[in-house]
Length: 482
Image (cartoon, rainbow, N blue to C red; front, side):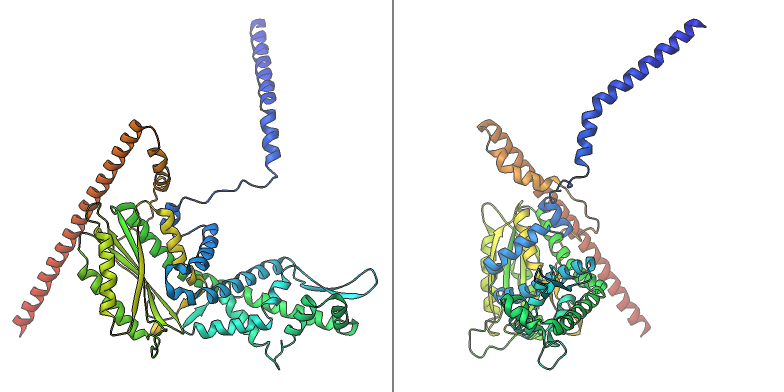
């Protein structure tokens, strides 16, 4: 009995001492984590370009970079030069409206009357107000009117539509014709002139009118929540289709080659009229037919076509063409040149020009991601509305079958592509084995592509044979009945 008591006492003593030492040892870690908890969360780096391309969701940093690249390079295609300033203004207005709605929801009172040290009354504006009222100055109103004339067959961002409606009510004789005079005195004139304009009898009158305008702007913008989501959803579907097809070819096709072309009618020639929707549909059929008939099947990978429109050119096409390259024959580069000359000759009677450029795209996930982001960024602010709700985007089917709806992403593909050059910069023996390994991977990729290509062609052949037999039996039944 006594022995059992001593054993249990010793066991409890060891347990408590162990718990004390563990808590003492973990104290710095607990204190360190406690200090980190209330602080700013660690910034998460955006996913790799292959992941963004697969899901059709480029990072916000890349989208901002795309707009800077657009204004510097005109997207590489001449027709986009007429789109940049106008769509950039729509984007600026939409972003300022979003910022105003977000800030106004936190502090509903936009303007208030305060007194300074001398007892003089003056208007005080919250932070989002100056940028919003700058949109209602005369220069911005003229630019908005020019945007509407430049894009007659377009659907604008819903917040830009709210801005246009209120901007029209700023004209002389309308209810908001005082906004221009208010902006001039409140934000531009020196303090003595500002105080003289906003004297005591009128300052409360202006405060009520300004707050009523901000309240209407906020209320109408908030009511468009579902409309904004629907507008962005349509643009996102186009971006996702284009990016997924590019990622599919970069991941599976051996040595892909991407070309980008613009088919439009230049306005520099006298007598040229804007291209109508019927004309552009006919030209699009010619382009696709020529692309399929004049391109060798061994290098053809597909196409993607975006429909664009402005008042000067009318309808025009932004075309992506995908080929396979060959190290010895260089078929892709020669085929791109021949395709450009062929399209020009076929559309010469219509006074339509074709310009473009092309590049090798093997493992170039970052470049292709930036290229497709720039090509689809306009649709999030200004989208073409075709007659009778016709399509504005076309994408071919992959040579090895349809793309799966599930998006299984190989997250290491872009990482391996970035580290390829670093691996090859090692010592000669290691470099030799790395080059041999890369060559084996390329051969395996080519073998898989050819196997899936033959399998898909056999499937299509079997389907065509079954369809032909079905049509033949149907004709025989019709003859027997007659």
